[in-house]
Amino acid sequence: MEFDTIAAISTPMGEGAIAIVRLSGEDAIPIADKLFKSIGGKKLTKMASHTIHYGHLIDTKTGQVVEEVMVSIMKGPKTFTKEDVVEINCHGGIVSVNRVLQHVLKNGARLAEPGEFTKRAFLNGRIDLSQAEAVMDLIRAKTDRAMNMALGQMEGRLSKLIRRLRQEILEILAHVEVNIDYPEYDDVEEMTHKMLNEKAHFVRDEINKLLQTSQQGKILREGLSTVIVGRPNVGKSSLLNSLVQENKAIVTDIPGTTRDVIEEYVNVRGVPLRLLDTAGIRETEDIVERIGVERSRQVLKEADLILLVLNYSDMLTVEDENLFEVVRGMDTIVIVNKTDLPRQIDMERVKLLAKDHKIVTTSLLEDQGVDELEEAIAALFFAGSLEAGDMTYVSNSRHIALLHQSLQVIEEAIEGVEIGTPIDIVQIDLTRTWELLGEIIGDSVHESLIDQLFSQFCLGK
Ligand code: GDP
Ligand code: ZN
Image 1 (cartoon, rainbow, N blue to C red):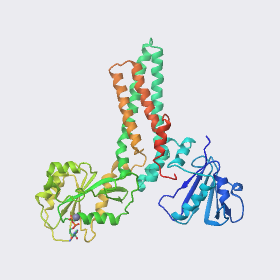
Image 2 (tube, rainbow, N blue to C red):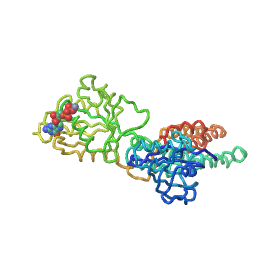
Image 3 (cartoon, rainbow, N blue to C red):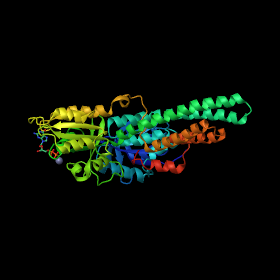
Image 4 (cartoon, helix red, strand yellow):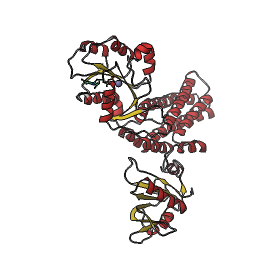
């Protein structure tokens, strides 16, 4: 495929002091060459691929030096887009990088649309659709764990598994075809049924497994919505502050995030917590009195994690007992705070009320017990399979939706076989499952869907 040359600012992850203008396309190197004056005077077009050069960017009109830059040239197809790629590194801030971009655009490059670099990589066959989406996740990844997950997906684990499932379905379809072509052979029909059952169940189970990982994937990407509850004065605000102070607060820059909801986003040992600060959610001191146990449960239902705070230096009250009732069945950690003061609370009663919930004692004033709390949070969410890095997480909402649809259709196929539906009807469901799975890896998507997907990317990727 032939495309024009595009350019955009492509700031590296973690936003260092260096900013990059990236060019991709046939004229990437000639355009850069017009602007660049290397120290030795050698032309970029004469340089070897995958080399980096120090020099100056020159205003082609006035001949004056614009910036001090490092230019890397990478010739296709061994590049991200499979096209010739040039990266102009400049160490100034946003002003100087913008200036460099303006000069690049004046000399023949076109400003890239959001996600256009990744789109090219996809269209040039460098990556498949789920890998392209993994790049998007990577750009947005907010914790190391989420980043590892995105990387794993980029390596094509999900694609590989989906291909395998589609292969299984193709094999069934091939058998069904034989059955339809030679209906007079009884044993063919029997064989078809047996194989259909086995393989369709296998595909269904695998889709199910993938879907089970999707909740974890979502949590890793979006953070666990966490609510701190407790009576007035037990130390809720102090807890929030110490969690935010001890852990790197992560800046969210997902487009479309509602601005009226302020979120404190922290990474607790790899568990991203989204501490909600909507009215009446974070500060729930009198929520139970205000709206009663049942409605409080409704309000807190959406939370992934509840931190229930009690006062060590005070006796348990009806309000405390009500809160235990409210959080019943939810992922909760009980925090008994103010252990620096004399004990008044009945710890035996707390244990009884807490049932399976983990209890942590803290003195937030003296900075005691926060480590144990963080450990408890990590243990709650990284118990079991989540830690075992060999799983394929599905975290992309489009993938999840397609998997749900595939599951539904293959279940219809399985049911059809069991109640003796004509095989050619079952064949339709199987073909549909095959198509739906294909959409995950981009094998049967329409141009408009592709455009829609790639327009979500950050500029410069
Ligand atoms: P909230 O009303 O539940 O949000 O409680 P705050 O976090 O505002 O704390 C209420 C008061 O208790 C403040 O004066 C805090 O300084 C104090 N406090 C919080 N944690 C501790 C602790 O561990 N020990 C002691 N002695 N005081 C604490
Ligand atoms: Zn408070």
